[in-house]
Length: 471
Image (cartoon, rainbow, N blue to C red; front, side):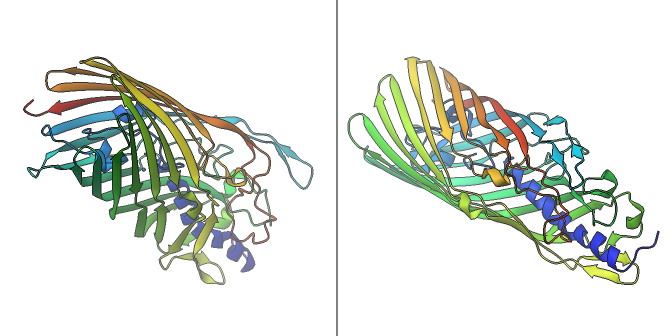
């Protein structure tokens, strides 16, 4: 079937936007995953802090999990230690899209879809000890934030915002030093290199208004974006002070993470509609960048043997997450009758993120020298306004409840932790989330796809072992 010169210009120009759709969906992994940033990963990374709901800023003296939460607490004066643990993260998420009525009065109803992805494992290996200089300790490690990917039906009503982001990875290599001045002040700093590899599958529509309907499946384009960056330097800094016999305070800052791939890969499956028979992309390379913002943590701890309790507050600067952008690298749509090629320009999707705030209350109780119990609870505000909420990034207010224990014997300690995260259910009626269609500049063709009912729950179970060398 031959196309007119006006129809291919409309029907094919949108193909380049598929790069952006993929990038947008891939961000849901960051989660999907870094373990302290709202929107991308869960509070409470590390099995021992998990059992305290992430209240581990002023606590954690001499524990290697402080590498992430507050490097000032890496005072390992008793000898070298090794920590190996893993968390298993399971996400239960549902979306029931609201019915819609088109301009002709025809009503469309949709079934409920659920996340079909398997639980995801998140490991860490940490090691550290004294340097030989009085008061100075070191630590290093490799860890992945607590996050879980999603998989939804390829033909489901959510397909225009997300199909799958499984197979993605965000992890950190981290080294730090901590210095203790007497028993009243500690300072620590770390350098990190993050590695990121994101895989995103999503759908956009090739509807031009000339025939068919906006959500006809023979006009769907399935795309996969693969984006990676293996050199992302950043760092963290922490302080700890003793306020009195029973009170301690601490603060830490985590630097931003910027993922920049000048050669991300885009794979496209064209629509089955005959008007796309001759369409093809001249290149599958795009330039993409995304930024995970900085994190500020403060904590106040009360200690009286055998009990300690910490109240931590966390700010994360997600208001900087205002859009997702990508620039095709000399990408053109070829095979357009009467035209030849159509260049694809820069792309953008608004997100309008907002800063998030959280409170986390957690503590330990030592039953005896060999057994400690812990528990915690937390609350965190959501990063995404209702108007831009979708299965791409289900990020509502969340409540967490956690528990754990440590059993010590000889040079070993075994940690167990479990946490349940309840995301506030959403019923969206004012969505601005539409299909991606660059030919639809006045928003008359692309349907709104974000209205409906959302629910999400996380369950995280972790098991770890700590070994003290020579003790």
